[in-house]
Amino acid sequence: MSQLLDGNAVRDQIKAECRPRIECLLAHAGRAPGLAVVLVGENPASQVYVRSKTKTAAELGIYSETITPDASITTDELLQQIQVLNSRPEIDAILVQLPLPSHIAEQTILLAVAPEKDVDGFHPYNMGLLATGRPGLRPCTPAGIIQLLKRYQLPISGRHAVVVGRSTIVGKPMAFLLLAENATVTICHSRTRDLEDVCRQADILVAAIGRAALITGTYIKPGAVVVDVGMNQVTDPAEAERIFRPDRLAAFAKRGSMLVGDVHPGDVERLASAYTPVPGGVGPLTIAMLMQNTIEAAERRTGLPPSQC
Ligand code: GUN
Image 1 (tube, helix red, strand yellow):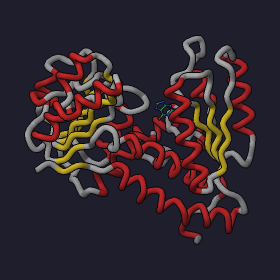
Image 2 (cartoon, protein in one colour):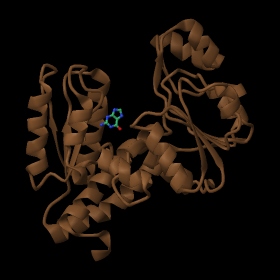
Image 3 (cartoon, helix red, strand yellow):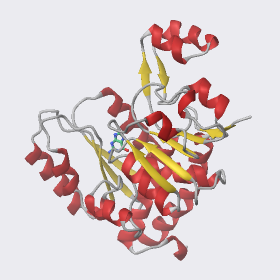
């Protein structure tokens, strides 16, 4: 029997741990943590993610505001808006939702966010802290995955972890976080030869590729722990037939599309010792960790570690 790793349950635990820290900040610093989200343009998926982030912030009593420049904003104009947020004392945390429109210099924007307010952990300074094993703000999705593994008491130390994907958001920071937990880490990407063979060596397999159910049974060592970061909409009926069991195909026919991860759902359930479902696995953890990072940034900026409460 394989164990389902419930991201919603871990999200609820993390959120519950956030509440007393927010109360402590209110009592001792006289204000709630403040989060500013910058959402450029009208990407529908980004709008959904950002709404979910600000809704969770409100639920916890974190102050948040969303800045929504038009898609036509220039890099220089956006840089000015970031500078304003950097200088506002009541804003502890700044998040620039990605992807940005293609005419904007994404690296320049991410570099402009003050590192102590960079709750995504994407600034090269924070990436450098991570790579050199120093404390700092960590990218939310991979940090959430470490929390999930630890809270389910799945051992990491000494295990061979294979990370498929080398993005700044997930793959690279995931590899460093696993390394910091003493895993032996392999990073795979689009040029990796014999991807299937490398994945099959993994005790812990993290799939962050963005390709629907690419990781099938032949990529999974029986008994492995499999973490699926993918969120892909399947609309092609032939593809749906390859991925979903007959009982779920009915739902697909009704809706015309279904969400699937990077891992084949039936194969992972059959082979893994533990795995994250899609939806309900990694997704909920990202927002919980964003709340935790926002609180951490506020604690550092106000000089109030939680031990003071
Ligand atoms: N787009 C997809 N995931 C993320 C994330 O974790 N942070 C930001 N800023 N943008 C994203």
